[in-house]
Amino acid sequence: METTVELNADATQLQQRIERFQTVREGILAQVRQVIVGQDEVLDQILIALFVGGHCLITGMPGTAKTLMVRTIAETLGLSFRRIQFTPDLMPSDITGTDIIEEDVTTGHRKWTFVEGPIFGNVVLADEINRTPPKTQAAMLEAMQERSCTVRGHVYNLPAPFFVLATQNPIELEGTYPLPEAQLDRFLFNTLLDYLSASDELKVVDLTTATKVVKVSAVTSAEELLEFQQLVRMVPIGESLARYVVDLVRATRHKSANAPDFVKKYVNYGGSIRAAQFIVLAAKARALSRRRYHVTYDDITALVLPVLRHRILLNFHAESERIDTDEILQRLLAHMPPPREV
Image (tube, rainbow, N blue to C red):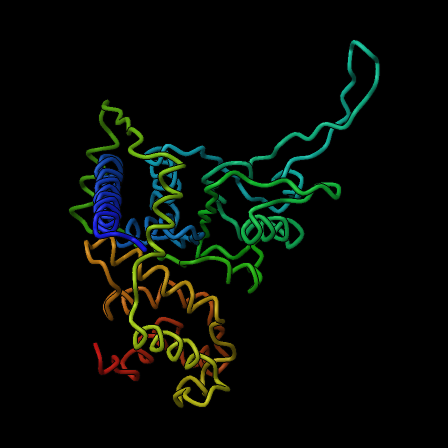
């Protein structure tokens, strides 16, 4: 049986871990802010994905600093960064690596040697991920789900932590391949990166056309980031809120009994159980980053759109009436009031 002294020591240690989490998060933002102007919501969602251990799909127009943002965050985390430019002729071996035959100069014997591909990094930027064919997407799918890759029947584990931060262009459809639904479901967030305000664009011009070169420094490490992921999972969530998340996700399925009429009319397929898991995990990370030690209703509603917008498939009725996924989700949130216990 634990004594009072042991319980107090555990509580003190836990409080120190929480304070360190918040200090590191503020440090990351301070470093990134030297390079990236604006985009507060996007940065917040990417950091939540990192603290949860999930992947993030960033959708934005060309020239909105998607690549620069990901590279800068990787540097502040002290993690290895790899960038893969996806093209229609990219092969799976270009991502995973391949076996080559090497000859031992002393014995003359030849042997197979595995040469790692760019997937072997902590933070992998999959630039324009929708430009590569399904065969190569399959290699990415295994890496994202299993944290491993298979080459010639051999399974190689990827370094931990492992994040895929993928970008895609929402307007240029020529030469692109729609991402398979199974792969989309592996992304924690689909984050929309919009244009900056006029004042922020002026700051960007001033910052990038001068001679000053900003250098960011690492504020944490891979080992500490793995500890933060465990810390996030310790944040409690009330049963009523967890039930609300499950009911909300189930309501996105047109065959569900509690699906509203507009879902039955416009939605072909709704979110899976993975969506409910990701909403809860992301809400825990958001609560901790706001210096709260439990999940609130606001944490859930703030993350419903980025978690669900890429998991819901609309039908031709929605397309003909120009109704998008975000509108369906906003109507669903308005349709489902918060739990009474909140």
